[in-house]
Image (cartoon, rainbow, N blue to C red; front, side):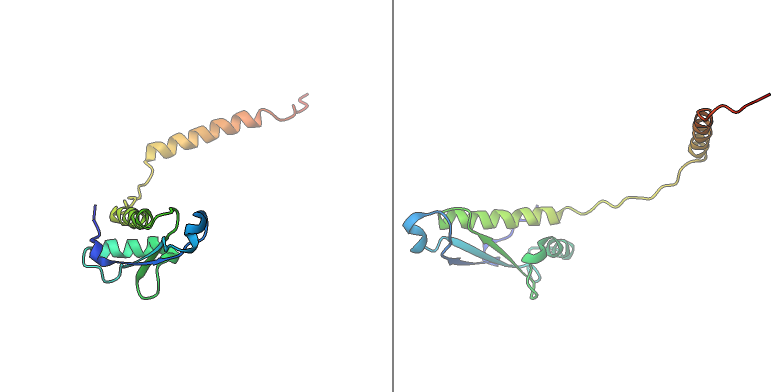
Length: 134
């Protein structure tokens, strides 16, 4: 698990809409966090590539990941929420994908399949209308 140091994160605070009463018009509680994923020294190259792929539309052209947090009424909780969401993305990107090794069916399994098909075909052919035999 890779932990992102806080000195690699940039925070910008702005006024958010939504619940909060009169407070919402006066206090900048919403957080926009920027993380330079492309030039981060704390991530390996493979993790960077997977993280930038995971970021999707949150990734800018210059390699920054932007996370907006407006769920909570306080700046501290929104800041913690943004950090937690980035950490979850980094944790997911840290897991290397397991590649499937292709295998081939054995001769015995092929034969069993063909015997089962023949048996099933016999059952189905017996369901037709009886033919007139003199």
